[in-house]
Length: 369
View 1 (cartoon, rainbow, N blue to C red):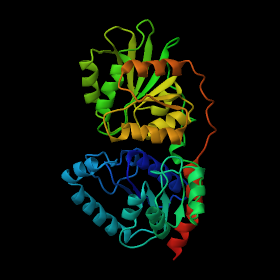
View 2: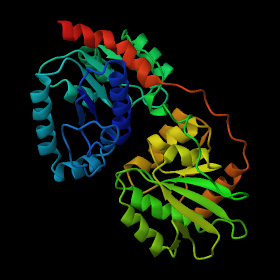
View 3: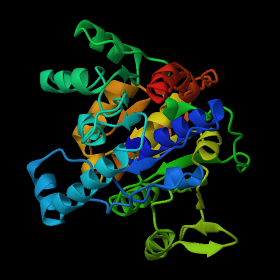
View 4: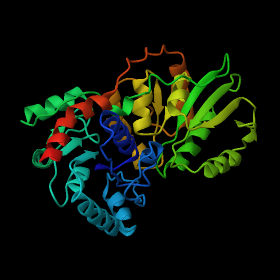
């Protein structure tokens, strides 16, 4: 059973499920996404065992206000239903994989105890170490731990908890993706408004920034949309900002900016000179591919200044956070980033398979017992 609590975590869970299936086709994968429909699992031909409404906070609680919104939105009944489903399913499984935060780990191991693999993707010693209580819970509930970076694995070791870093599955397959065709002699941007409900407000802010780009220079942009985003709403926002549509291309009123919607995130990032990103996981992936990522305050919990400052500590100088609501300040950073040399692409990795190989003995021993 793979339990994950977030869209990025779902993607990791789906990659791990595929890796287990590649190593042993007899293994049955039971995905339990705690937020949303589990689109990442469905894309890999896995059938989610639960479909949960997206909480008002988008599953990203940082303030008391976020918690109050979720409580008013019925989060208690949702959590209760999830817990009952997991407890019911746990009677027929051999092992558990939890991908996300410590809450995900606790929910995944509710009920009967099973050998448990934990990928603590929500935190890193680079920007937010685990608390003493979290270390205690992880020690009690997780048998094998695979961190998102080496520094965090070393931090676990100093606490007397065995953890390994075998690569971040979120980056698997990105390097091998061929780029999309791009216009010649035109500055090209990848636009990442995010995947939660705030993406629509974030997209409006991105269009506002683009409207202040130099009028004498044409720009081309890939609007990278996750499966959770409603395209019709994006179309309406484009039309409200004066964009016209023709043959899949959206053009601004001045005829200098052309935008194309695409679900092919990695291919669009490869084809871009820089990235405007108000996202979480997608920002990290774009920076890992060597692109400059320009971020600024957005409209929700995922795109608050605090979040991007944390993300910068995780990503490093590739993330250029502009703590300003003035589009001109953001445009200046975008223009400067377009003139910077891009980092060489990283080497190919397959962290999901590496983790699955290490975890197989735990699962096989559980089946034998």
